[in-house]
Image (cartoon, rainbow, N blue to C red; front, side):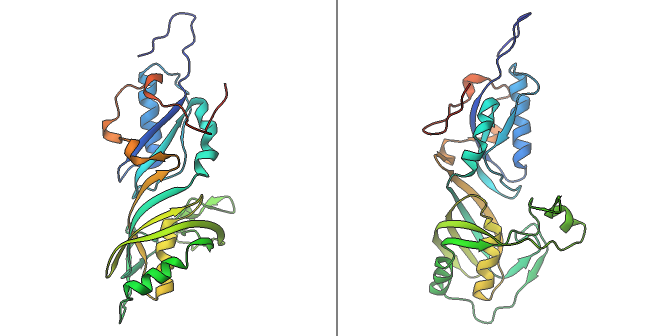
Amino acid sequence: MMTEQPGQAVPTPAGLLLIDKPEGPTSMDVCRRVRRRLIAGGAPKRVKVGHGGTLDPLATGLLVVLIGKATRLCDQVMRSRKVYLTQIDFSCFTITDDREGARLEVEVGSPPSAERVAAACANFVGVIQQEPPAFSAMKIGGKRAYKLARAGETPKLAARPVEIHAIQMLEYAWPLLSIEVACGKGTYIRALARDLGRALGTGGSLMSLRRTVAEPFDVREAVKLDLLPDVLGQADLMSPPGDLRFTS
């Protein structure tokens, strides 16, 4: 633990933590827990803690937490290639595009074959126009879309280009599809689930989501949130690898 001597400033820790986020807490909840542990280790109370890409409360997996001057790397980490494991339910839509919203069941007379599902997935690979979910942090007229949606409004978000590098089918047994998605910044996997359903003439909502990669980091290197030490200091942080560099 760092201790402050009279007249001596405590250096602000700087570096990264790779957290395997469980379902439930928000990304900022995780940052607040890290900040409390850093302060317990002697860091200044205003130590900066951020992350390199939001995971919804429903989502699990790799969250890159940035501390001190490493928060300057936020844009670099957010631009990195991400990989997700996800399960999609083709039997319903929801207002949130995931299982947190009320289900709107969709009757499908003849479920699509695995070959047709694979072809639909292939059509979403590349640079596509994607409409963000109504329940998202996107802003409309200065207000968050999810706040408008919760107030009973139906925010209309303009489609924007995102890049999906690859979609790999892992398992398909109607109505559930498991896929691995590699994509770029700003891609909503919830929206992909919705749009795949629309393309197939079925429902489409996200049942689960796990981030496994945020290049160059892998979830296998991450520590589970409930195993994070109660006290954190500089020695617990990793330095940015490769091209991710911050200056003094």
